[in-house]
Amino acid sequence: MLRIVNLEEIEGLLLRIPKLVDRLEQQDPEFIQEVKRWLITLEQVLMNNRMPVGGSIAALRAVLNTSEHGVIPAGIVFNGKPTSRKIGNATAADVLRRTSELVSNALREDSSRIAEAERLGQQLLAIARSKGLTLVEISAGEPIQNIKKLWRTISADSNLSPGAVRLESLIGRDDALIVLDRVITAGHYDLNPA
Image (tube, rainbow, N blue to C red):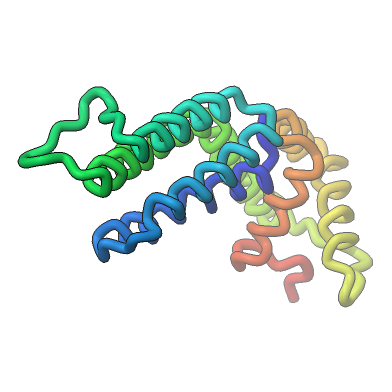
């Protein structure tokens, strides 16, 4: 189970793919090396998060490495004579596509779980607002303490506590606080309505 910060780190790496594809379109001679560096970074982040898909990414990196020595991977077909640059670029583009699919599939469950937690956080805060629950002692410049106070208020309310338990079971207490903070920051809830 990934934490929000870890999921977003991996998603951030996936968001670099369009810039890599731009380099291919611009016929950048460093395209293959950039893809390799990106793969190494992604692989390390996945391994740090104990995600087995990191091994699959290492295998794809190996395919890219062998293509630089003239090995044409299965499934890649050329019109005309395959040059080493054509082989490398085609392999790197294929590796990007396959990596994106593998990692996106590996993240699907965690992404859904966190999206559900965000919806639940919005609902909890909407109910809290409709009940008139506010924080009694809001400390200016203490956003973390304010979020913790809000969490305690929600958890103590008999109508909201089942939702708080569900939220915590989905993503843990620390990520629940992050979700509440984001809902508030997005303007969906005022900590001290007038």
